Image 1: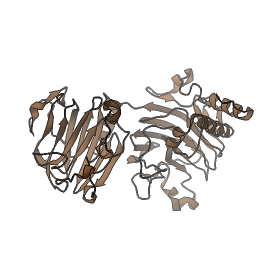
Image 2: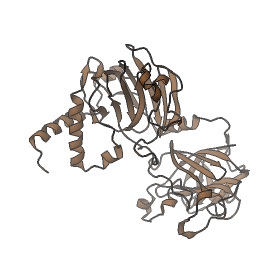
Image 3: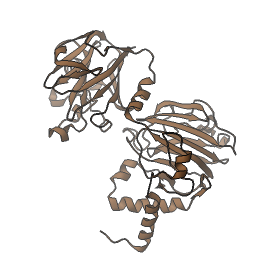
Image 4: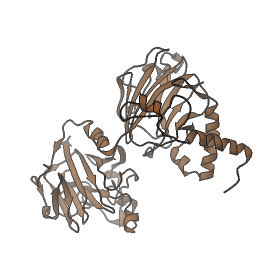
Length: 443
């Protein structure tokens, strides 16, 4: 191990002190945390917190271990000089690096209260991404930036994007405590400020690279920016798969109807004997396959469903399928359903346009947002004209216009890509991939 210099040794000790027992619950936490929640602040010191900054969390994780330790030490030393525990309050003097959780979080519910001063500006970074905005809504110098609309918006979203500005002004007068409830599933964020909904299921954009998605996991950061701010009652609850899928499935649920009764293949056509109904799900039989499809046809529609994969599992969603031929080539497209770790599971290399969520052979989707093998994933597919959007577990992994596609995998043309209508179905490929809660609505 490389020897650490005296000054670096001190810094290293500081960061270790802050990180040790990062999420250990003390007796005081147990007494004050609501059922199902864990206290992030223990009411006495900075245990569980490190220093942080406006820094891409993926790049932070990619740092060599020794560089990450050194960066942690510098940020944490600076943070500890500006933050203090004062009774049951976590207090910042308006300067310094941000209080950042040592633990990373995926889907969660966060409860937190804050009290700040005139002209102050702060925020809460979600998975290391800025931010749920906090500021002085009475400061006329910031009206040009939207301060008069109040706190709670996803201020770093693009102008005009959902969530950029809060839906209502909900800030309390200075000197009073404000209370946030923040629910995050995938990149979808809902925010309540003082009991009022100010952000409704909006996508949090990736401030560091708007062409890519935010991380699936990352820390909570309390930003400091020019004025004292006090925090208290900081509690978090990690959200599991079933609850996350219910949250995603319940938003904008109007107009959907089930296309699968959970018992048999009534309303379906194709080689249904190659599939079975098991535990309210359609499952492709091992070493069987073929495309099964709804007897009804659809033009513009949105589909919502859950799927579960075995290791290396391969299937697909048939979009505007003509009822015969290949879903990928004769239909508008096959929206790929594939284990994100397919290459590791099978030893076979794939083209990016074969990855899960891709318009097979035409446009690649973003990878890395599936749940672990054996868990149910929630997917939403929107088809309007020549455009297709795929949202997986709350992350938009594909949003493209097939009319713009000029290059194809293996130079194989897709003659059906311009179809304007057809059936919806599943393109099985020998693996026991399961689908349930299959619902559609038309536009």
